[in-house]
Length: 428
Image 1 (tube, rainbow, N blue to C red):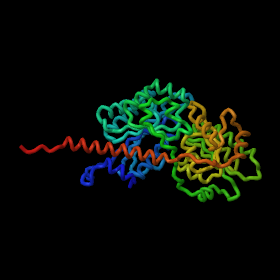
Image 2: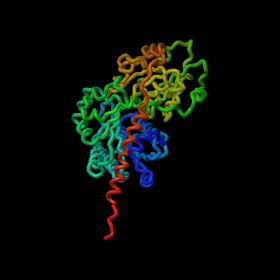
Image 3: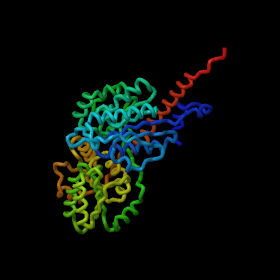
Image 4: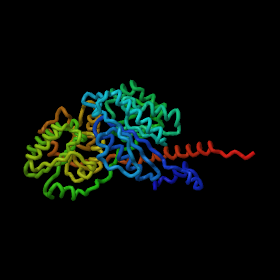
């Protein structure tokens, strides 16, 4: 049972009315146009909410092609939207269906609206974009505003979206600042201003700042498999070092993997290094085959396409080579592992900014893509050490506190409106 009893006493009905309280409903929209980061983060948040708030039911909306590959907790169901994709240019395209972008967005929008009308959520948690991909949430948000005004809207933002110049321009052009002020009750930022001051960098208005909260970074739970078992599975002896390579979803991860395979040929042979490359399900098939063939030719290298339990492998590794995606960085920092981070720079500068800010603070070794080659990677791997400072990682608890408070407010508002509309008139 969730422990915030003081909050419960403020907003839940009296004990005599408890039988009238229904399950609180949370509708979650996960932005899904690129990679696995957003869906992994939203599922982690959903899992934590379900662990801490037994009275909650969650319906997740996502077009992620790997949604079915994750373990889904009891209390959560999902509606799979048609897949969209954001390529290297940043333009949104249809991933699988033989339909145009506008047709597909219209279909997704109608599915989302139908879910909202039928599910009648107490709270709508929106990932990253206030209006969703290509404004696909506009009709749903307008529905809540006109027909279900007690539903609370919450925008979840990772610490860094893109460069301030690009983000401010995009948000102004798309009316995001206005949407937040008009429709959203809170903005939850999974980061801290000491790394990136989101509200200042992106020029939030005083009204938005008033309802914005830094929650800290998301601390992932320990892996499901012990490091000892992972290392035994990979046949890693106590004298050997395991390097884990992970380019996230893998769509643009081949250069990272290929350069790593060249770099390990340069490593000092007095130490025995073994490698596990989790190349990602989004890596193009031809590139996957090249990675698999390279591993077949090197007995010290093993490969894996995907895991929904990356934390187990991070905890088992002696060092990590990765991109600078939000989730992977958080997992590395929670595990306190030495890491070499190589950010992507296109189409967004999010990873570049994160790697630069955190690299300067000493959380890991960061290599700019322009300087990334086998020699620079080998040098960084030879000079690695675990970070000596810690980051604020209480994001899940703070998100849960905020959402619980809003959910219970909505539940009480609905109960009040229900009773008000069902007053028994005296018999004449």
